[in-house]
Length: 226
Image (cartoon, rainbow, N blue to C red):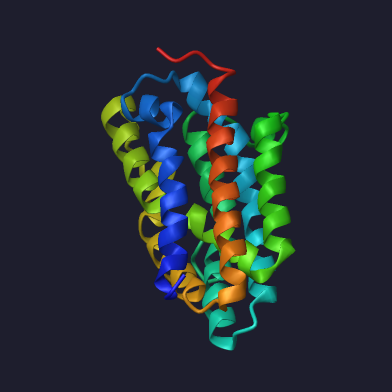
């Protein structure tokens, strides 16, 4: 690689091959071909990833060698954890989404996880603790996709399922903008990585994109799509 910008560009290329919005499960959601029971099943599974995700951000933050980088990642973590006054942590926002679909908190928290859900959580945990470069690559592979995912989810919920109440949509509303900023932070930090660490960041981004794709496949194989 001859310049820093190729790090994020290379991860973007890896992600594009298995982008969440290209997955048949998400396409079926956008087209309104999933039942509400299927959305509830998805919501119960995905909650456990959302709840675990701040720990990955925290690991990347603690491993960051750059003071300015740590400050930016700390702001990301504060948003995830709802530390700012008047803000809710993102796991609580996801629970609001699940409950808006008709779930209850006990059912969501007590959900038996699919093997692919467990693998996603474990992959994020492992990559975020392996090294700073690895964790940063994984974080970027996730957060760079989510603004587009959030917009598509909002449109699908409103237009295909008639779900318009803001508490149910708030998780996605927040991530339409928050993850633009978060992915910009990750991109900036990736562009500062030493040459020797770039390949590891790219490989981690590729692996995490695969784990996200497999998570959706795990949900898809257990439900019927119209």
